[in-house]
Length: 453
Ligand code: NAD
Image 1 (cartoon, rainbow, N blue to C red):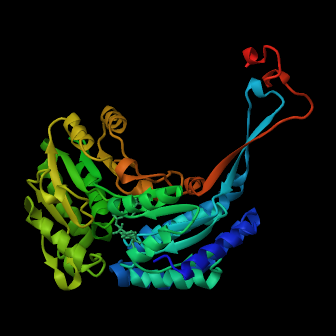
Image 2 (cartoon, rainbow, N blue to C red; image 1 turned 135 degrees about the vertical axis):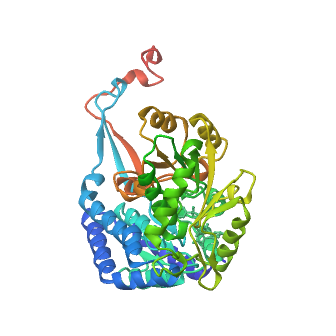
Image 3 (tube, rainbow, N blue to C red; image 1 turned 60 degrees about the horizontal axis):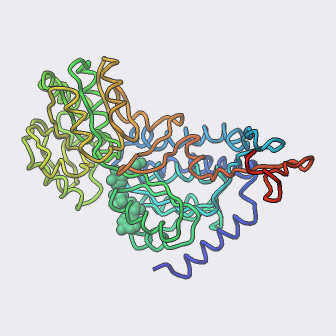
């Protein structure tokens, strides 16, 4: 379905990029400031769209989407000049007389494909990186959050010409059509399965890419963790956005000695955060679509429900739910949950918990609650995962000082802060040779030349 309109758009962006306009620092800075001004001006509409698409409360909209985008923009505006400076490097003795430098260079025209769960932040954050690095961008928001998709088209269309930034709306067909375009970089956020499709499409043209994917992120609670605080931080991480967070704790691995007490504190925290009946709380998020609602409610047959479990099909809401007596062969443990259902699995030795995780694909996030430095070191060193927190959940994503991304099945590449600039830049290595003298011994005509090399 790659059609003439798309081809014309990509060509227009390529021509614009080749004109060199997007490269100077001043141009990039002006565009980032323009973007910030527009986003501030549209803040009310952004909050409304998030409410419409996902019933996000204003508090959640601000704390998990809008605030993060402002932080990312301010950080980028502040540091851009220093990131753009080419780095001078030493050369080897064999290269005496020459100089080396590494120049961050934009890729050119980039394609950003965004998901629905944080439909604002996960579309705008990569865009900030793409523009900071001097690229043009085509953005494809998710069709499952139509209010945000059309708002992004309106905001970005209002401040940028399509030759610089364009929003193309639509579903998987539009996405696949764009993946057939000869862009210079692809930045994809979404599911593991679609990630594979994206990578195959990129391989056809050898287009470099970043994949921000998902998976089952474990949350380990060791016997020495401060349980009340731990429970609050887990409830925050799991039930924000009704569990539809790529880095939400997917399941709990709890030391058997503290399970009962932890569950009691988790129930208490759910009540404290969302009230006695979360289904009627206007600030509690809803499931994005009927299809996802059906998928999630089918998990309620797994194990035994120790808290929650009620649903409101008319509003697509599911109570914060804890599942006990869960085993790995149950459907709820076979795929990423991506909803407000938290299964609990016990362990005896920390090594058992580590082995259970390492028997499965490398997770996007890992959370560990413990006071013991040895346990912390052991887990961090022996489990490969994208990123995570000790004694907290989610917060590692919200600082521009930490690059964010997955590893293995949970993704490749990282962004945020300088990580975004690096992701959207090619680091070009240049060696400049002196003409003042020459080492003739490297030429084939030189007698015994090779033995000096
Ligand atoms: P998705 O993979 O279904 O869709 C993501 C994007 O890809 C959308 O824009 C969609 O239109 C497009 N798409 C869908 N099917 C396609 C196809 N067959 N070919 C080409 N494009 C296609 O993901 P989603 O449901 O929107 O998001 C949820 C998933 O994303 C979860 O797995 C979650 O863990 C992951 N996620 C990861 C991160 C991260 O930063 N690592 C962030 C948010 C979500």
